[in-house]
Amino acid sequence: MRLAADPQHPDYNATMLPGNVYLNGEWLAHCIFADEDSGEAVCAALNSDGSIYLVDDEFATEVKCGHIRIERRTTPGAAGFDAWMRERTGAAHAAYMAHHSAGGRVYL
Image (cartoon, rainbow, N blue to C red):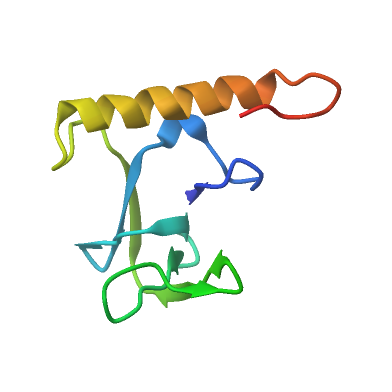
């Protein structure tokens, strides 16, 4: 399975989001693309403070390789039910809006 967080990516699947990606059994934070078949995951690179590293106003990425497992998250995460519900409704709204655009422009 392949899964991307970017709605413009061909492997974007709103029904699988939010999802958890694991590399060699350990959860990957800030993952934006994962491919179970090739064993690769693209994640946001973090600086020494644990914040996302920016290069020219865009976040830097790093490729991680190993055994990749993708799971659809169906239970509330550590942030609780409200955060979990916001993620689910946000993903559903994004999927709806991606399919309903006016004049070729996608409204998010």
